[in-house]
Image 1: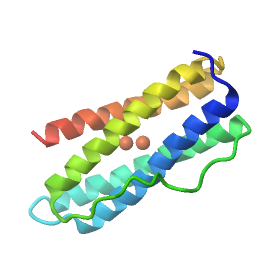
Image 2: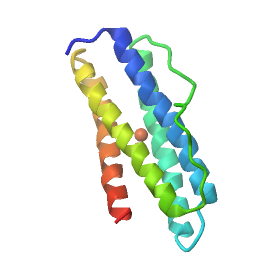
Image 3: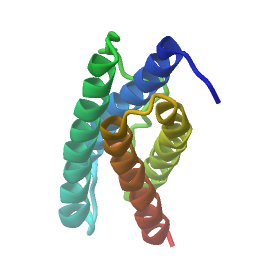
Image 4: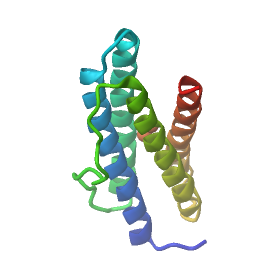
Length: 141
Ligand SMILES: [Fe+2]
Ligand SMILES: [Fe+2]
């Protein structure tokens, strides 16, 4: 698939907006998670904030490298407020699924640029998202 640079920048901005939403969602859930699993899940959600912040920085750097303008807005998909950890994990699963799909679509576009460093940094994120999907699948069993 050939894709022009502005199309790739748009796709990267979609991924960045999704990371910005993930940061807000996980920070919210870390604060509100209640019940017997709070101790573990609050820390887990905090780690997801950190991971999403790292991902956002890498995607932003990719957009800068391509001479694009990085979005500062988060994706507008609603963040569901709940104190029920199972609901939170289900929302997290949906979020991670969408993230892995997004990076799965971006990688072939990046490949057309022939920039190995850029490809490698985005592939690393893609693997992180796939690991999160699998982890959440196990947590929801
Ligand atoms: Fe991410
Ligand atoms: Fe993620």
